[in-house]
Image 1 (cartoon, helix red, strand yellow):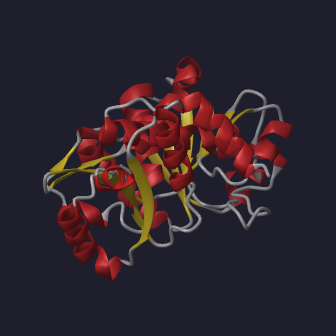
Image 2 (spheres, one colour):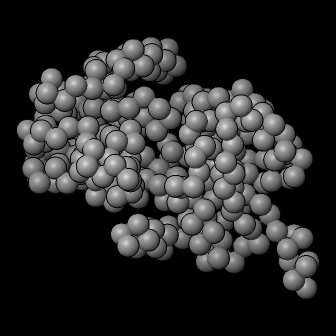
Amino acid sequence: MRNSFYENTEVIGLIGQPVKQSYSPFIHNVAIELTKLNYIYLPFNVPSSNLGNALKGMNALGIKGFNVTIPHKVKILDYLNNLSEEAADTGAVNTVVNDHGKLTGYNTDVYGVLETLLPYKDEISGNRVTVVGSGGAARAAIYVLIRYFKPLKIHLVNRTEQRAESLRVYFRDKLKFDSFKTHELFPPDLVDLFSKSKLIINATPVGMYPDFDDNITSIPESFNKNQIAFDLVYNPVKTKFLQLAQSRGAIVLDGITMLVYQAAKSFYLWTGVEMPVTDLNKSLRLLISR
């Protein structure tokens, strides 16, 4: 009986490097237990040089699908058969579905960002917003802002302004939106920009465990009570960025909600079953806060 159970177990997972810090195995395996599905979610440490071979192996093993994290979110597009609209428009993939050898890429980070920000749509639309970062998470955030919130202007901030500029050009050409301004991440020069932004999104890993004390800006005047500060970092739950913003009266949104919503979308794509989002949100907060 048990042998038959394991023979029919569907495998889903995560590829990236590193993967040991990821909470995705916890989220998905708890969801599998709660929904009583015969699945298991496994992390696979895959260096960039082995990405192609890893995908061939996953196909050969019949792995049903997997999440994609750093450093593969953009490079994996070269190996996929199909892309969802969000994946094609962002140029980044974080979820792959394997349908009998045909690999389709999705960007469920888009869903995670959208669901987190939707309650504040009226406040964000038509105002200035700032996105810090230039990786896959930043791409998802920029796409969501253009597609669903129609801001007055998006300020793109990155340690290397050239990378911010490349994102500006990418989204100008892809989504026909060119109300951008790019900046180098040099906090003393950005206080005025930050303080005049209705929404500030940290789409970098700055402030993530174990570097708790790092912050994209440690200047209190960067924030005020008329703002929303959204940090895609989820460990710790309350980063220095969010602590400082909250101390100045801003609305703060942590990365847990976004992480669980993007996971829920991936889970549904693989299983056709809704993830119990509320239970997972509570469980993950308890785990990280220990």
